[in-house]
Length: 460
Image 1 (spheres, rainbow, N blue to C red):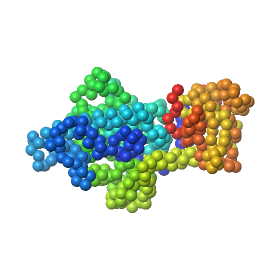
Image 2 (tube, rainbow, N blue to C red):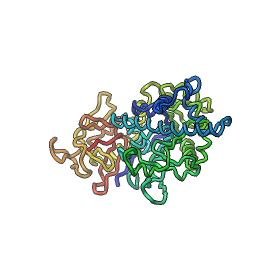
Image 3 (cartoon, rainbow, N blue to C red):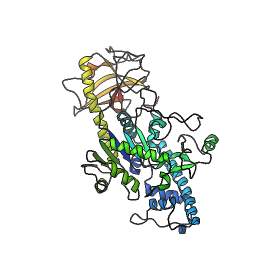
């Protein structure tokens, strides 16, 4: 089994993800207010039956919360009417998110998304999200990561979802501990379904987003009487907290935030309507945590954090490209932390052959090495980044056109007297930053050094 044997040693990290995170990953993804307006428009309700929304007055989020929970002044008929509207809006919101995500899948995600999922997997990060979309799950599915057991799947990362047991399997519910990231979806998801009014949580299931819900009879029959399970950003969430599965997700998110040395808010503005999340942050943000705000309006979010009682200094990353810059910094950190591991290996085994590759994926031979103008970046030129593990020849190289190609030794790649700060691999016009080392599979000599790039592996 191929494993990451030299992961980055970044601090224990928890990310808090808002709608701005998804918009940064794919421009087609809507922000919260826009999502609500699109859903409302799609229902074609009489405008006279809906209020006027304004950022300084009644927001769509507040109104949605009113519909979701029984209001003390409502009659029974008004309460039932509001619940019917909330059910229609929930389905419409899920449709709008699904359409936006399908468009994002067609146009492609930002390259940093796969890099961030790699870092989260290697560092066992906790990801606390308020988003209904499945962008993180999609990144997990597109480029599988591995632990000592097997490939990491979506059910292995989503909190509260039984791993290795899909809705179509008539097996006893079971959970397994996996060495990977944890994704806590506090507001539900477009691929979660439950029977309306179920307070036990037993009917809450996940149906893989990749399944065509509209044309698949099996999918429709499996969903049955369930409806999409999304939680409004209400001030109480009372009815939803009656569900033990929802409470479990929130408690796991709290544990993740409390154990983290660093909490990073990405694209999440801490809206006043979401007092449950404000309470969670207020209880989890102790004085010893490193706090980072990644948001175009970072100063305003930092002010809200301080108002919640955060006393640690808050590092700010603002601007429209703030998310990409944050991930770039983390990628640089991972690559820099890998260098001492390689230099130690260089002292012990300078003749170790070096390849570039992914776990259970393609490998490539290193044909040449160069330094960039800043002399801090080591560039590995890689050829044939599509070869099975073990098919690359050991050094030394005898000619540039030999096939199968031979690779270089570690002493040819690294100079202990002048180590770089980062390593990048370049192949066929694409560039990846190297962030970890992979143990070779059983059929390959164990003296190989396999460098793992950050991000999606190339398609075969």
